[in-house]
Image 1: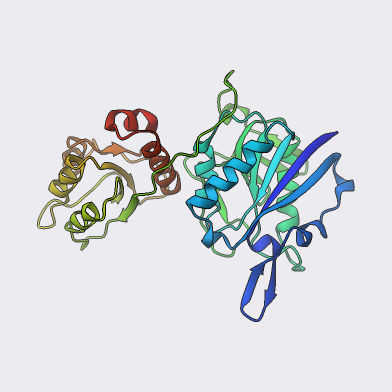
Image 2: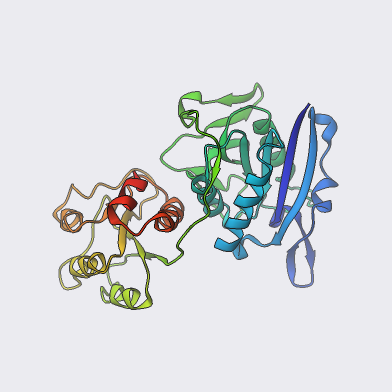
Amino acid sequence: MKKILILATGGTISSIKNENGLVPENKKEILKYINQDEFDFELTIKDILLLDSSNIQPEEWKLIATEVFSHIDEYDAIIITHGTDTMAYTSSMLSFMLQNPNIPIIFTGSQLPISHPLTDAISNLKTAFTMALSNLNGIFLAFDRKIYLGCRAVKVRTSGFNAFESINYDCIAYIDSKGLNINYHLLPQKNNYLPSLNISINTDVFLLKLTPTTPPKIIDSLIKLGIRGLIIEAFGIGGIQHIRRDFVKFIEEAINNNITVVMCSQCLYEKADFTVYEVGMKVLQKGIIEALDMTSEACVTKLMWALGQSNNPNKIRSIFF
């Protein structure tokens, strides 16, 4: 019989309502609604946090990754229940902190508490259980009967049950009346390396979304604040203003100050390509890193992780690709 561990971190899935709104409760709230007779496995559940996901930050990422790694040889799968608002950040970061996982590690949560009569929590947990029994190794996110790669998922709806989508990458699997349907060709390539944990990160990273009126001098302020990484969400396929508000010279200044600059598109779908227009080529020639089709969540967490490994721009660039 397979052994599955649930690491509970709080979030809506385990919340109860009090006079101030929804507040995360402990693992007992989840256990009350799980019918283990429906699945053939041995279940253990452990509280490691009791937080709304808005309060799950880098310190908690390290704790979650370390906790997962400490149990990776004891269980056949690990499920992490997590609030939805920052779940994509945590699942992305664990995709970098935990290399070569030898079991499925699956994030899930819900839009309504598990005690709510219309909850999606039970369905999402069953999706996670199904994936846990699949023998597919990796970091995944289970929601609304779909399985996504942890570094490709983005929360795109505030209240809909189909809250997450897989951006620029099809879902790894989905559940219908026939059971679990797996897109095997999309799975990460297998290798013979052992699982490893590396939680060294540098959180001095800032995400800047451009508007037509964003003042370029904001980059000067960020340099003075001591940031080590800057992610800029540019326009369309790779546009950035350089007339009147000339971002190019300020980006060059940041790079000259040993700040790694990554640029992606504000568009959710399809990849950025800074070689298409002159405005994009100008920053590409200064030494920025193109994020191509990565999500903003993956960009932020990967840059933090890369900066935790090295201060060398060439090394950081090689980590990104």
